[in-house]
Image (cartoon, rainbow over all chains, first blue to last red; front, side):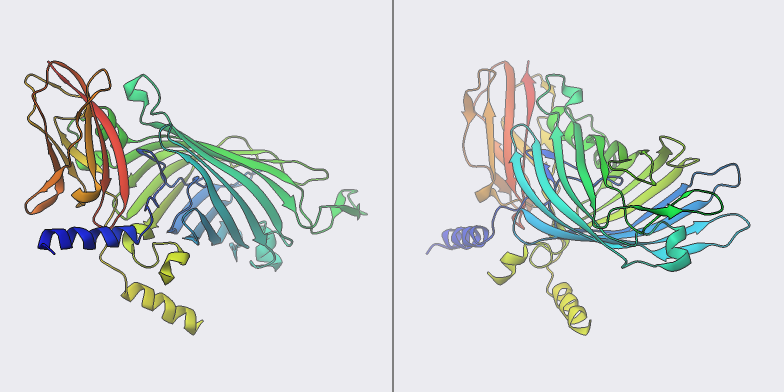
Length: 321
Length: 117
């Protein structure tokens, strides 16, 4: 066999032995970034190590307690479009002049399936279900102070992403909208068990109320602008930026409940390099029940499909081929 | 726990050097540009090396008719630059549609327009 033909055949065999590899969140030319307040619609091999959050908590006139957290997430594909993830984290609640509480959060596991991708119209749809395992986090005084649930919840969820590449106005085409909507079902329903003999206030069991929750992100890809619409000759650093606005939301869906509707906005920027990304956003509480002042969230993100393309970065079913 | 640690170590030790998705870093003619004379070639420079056997560049005129369907090549010693020759183009708007397979088999795609005055 001629040398170049042999090389071509070898390369061809190598490529044919690997399925199409799109593990980043691509729908056609549009890549959905890893957002900080809501989960993106993609199923991938990746990790967030860590996500740091600071948000001053609601207060009734006294000094606002500051809540800090370090969160960790690991995502792994089992097949090309089906995977799982684990989330956990450690939180601190610091109030000036008072004791600082700190606690591990409950572990959450998620199964997710990327059900539909339309490359031409830059659309992606995924379905998932999350299970909060409780009490796997810290219990007792510290767990109570940080709001750790004592019983678990199950959340079916739908995720989507849509790039605006269809639009006739070129400078709007780098926009993308991603979002998700879930319904959290309490594994042990919240019930009134009696009344406080002194105050008359209702007493509850250790269950949870059901909840609606979700969020949206609007992102503007400078890479898309440079490679699909118009190249202004900007530095490569700028082409890796994606300004983003996010909102997450939750609202009680059953009675009785002890929660209130909350909105949290994030405004910031994401920098996506070849195998890692960094995101930083200012956090803006949407109402008094969400927080008292602005906070901040930052994340360091790893893409295993680029970092370890032949091992951790490919679906588990392909490990044995 | 020890089994998990050994497994993780094995995964890391067997890892290849990091490659990545081939993003379009620069194009000639430039994305969204107007050029005074017909270009002789389309040259796409990616952020990673690409495999020309499994990458394509198609050019269509304003009516959607393909003016180039030939196989692109990479330049000697620079597998990040994918090139395809062009026939003589007339004035008008052209769309470049590309599909790239990086050397570690990640696939990316895109399209852009340029105008010949």
